[in-house]
Length: 336
Image (tube, rainbow, N blue to C red; front, top):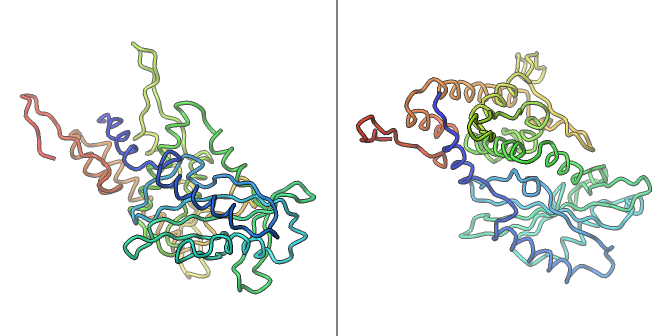
């Protein structure tokens, strides 16, 4: 098939979002400074760390232009001293309140939303953790401010352990291909699913599928230079094929029909099923879309013209994927 590595690398450069993004760093640092200066004297001491795709090196530019930054706050508290897990979240909310129009205590974090032209443009999620527990484990504060008591609780969590697992799965250029492939799949997701509700798989669910054996490094060795030559298209194709094979077909009592279902557990505490919020019908629809993606990738493999192969990939990923014009034998170009 056509060698599309150049196009995939350009595509990756178009969509990647990482810790070098100056705007995101600025927003984070401004809020951390405000938190430090304004937090109540009654609040416990704390340390901070980056978490989420931003920290794992798998972030992409959002299609809806709403940038998401995840920050962890490790408070030097024992969860047993705070029956109401929302209380430490109030320390954070109160310190940041008024910085923007929207500073909200959500189920898993405190969210600060920045708006531009009346629309959400950035939001920074502060996850609050109890980090001085007798069992040596870390717990995240769950619950909204006015939730019933049973919904305000501490849950064991290991976000830094997760980051370490993802970042240490591969090394060197192999790790770079791993991260690129995750970004390709996440971009496909954002281009093909609504960002509202639970109809789409989460980014971390797709990342863990890749981590958990669906991804494998695809490279050859150049006989002349003895250097590794990476093939991102083949790595992506294999990963999607393996993800499709992870679905099982069974009866759904809720949907009253046969559905394709999938599960993937977080490899660290709380070891939860990352597809648990999707209904059986939503997972069945995900299977259909994964199957369609694999079919489109198979089409790409059969193309002999670069522009035709790229056009199919634009359908899958959006306009960020480049369309390269084929050069004819006489030196003219075919229109893309």
